[in-house]
Length: 112
Image 1 (cartoon, one colour):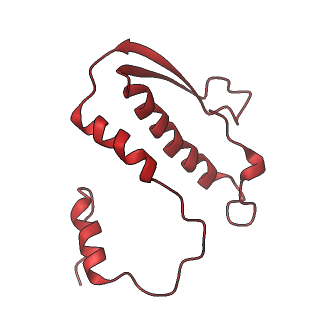
Image 2: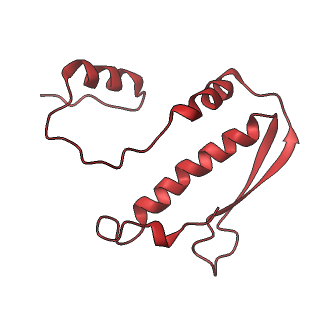
């Protein structure tokens, strides 16, 4: 997996941090795609230190049955997308915030 510096948003991501985070999400999807036919992904992170755009090498490892959670992630992949448009000034409605918060096991509620 290579970062494509030509696609980096120079004004909003001058250091390329967001681009690398996006590549991490793509790496996660790649690992799930390797799991789908029943293989364990073999990931070599930053395989060539001289090439900072070469972020990871992914291969197929030993065969292993997939889990139910992995099957759910595979089925969800076609629905995932990136929103690149502007966000409106409207606050997120309370029911939406509550639903997102209840799904996040690591979130802590702020005391008011």
